[in-house]
Image 1 (cartoon, rainbow, N blue to C red):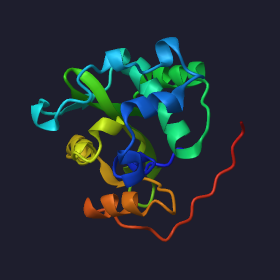
Image 2 (image 1 turned 90 degrees about the vertical axis):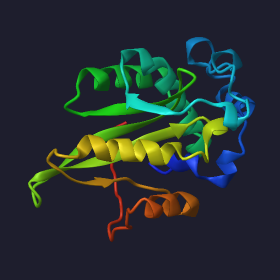
Image 3 (image 1 turned 180 degrees about the horizontal axis):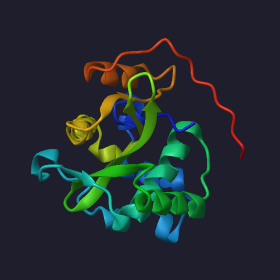
Length: 202
């Protein structure tokens, strides 16, 4: 499953050591052309972090689909060793961005390049007469991890929810990913008593 804490591949010390070149290796040889993240796309990726401009967070638009698709392909390979079908993930992103009633993406930018993303989907709670927002599909380029980007995206989401009929935020995390769990706990999230079950049609 696409765990949200794969998610904090952001905070995972093993993932944090990945270089951009290793990310490219994770994705090749299966994904080339428009689904291949090249060094040329991120020429400043290895520069000293003190020289980087501030990270900006915004909601995703149609022009972000290609890079978010690449990130999702990388998530699947990096965390579950799964191969996603590029056309399917791209169609899924296009559909979501056209149908905001199902959710939305936000992205983090540096040097006017997208370096991270996460998706929000909705769950109606009849017990609370309000919505939960589910945090999913989080990805940050390896060179930009451990710089507080997930924390900033998390806060951006909370700011968006302020004043709306939102009763809380949920995510799922791999059982063994203690680093990710600690990250969420540091942000005020708490472990629930529920186990997650699923049955898929594909």
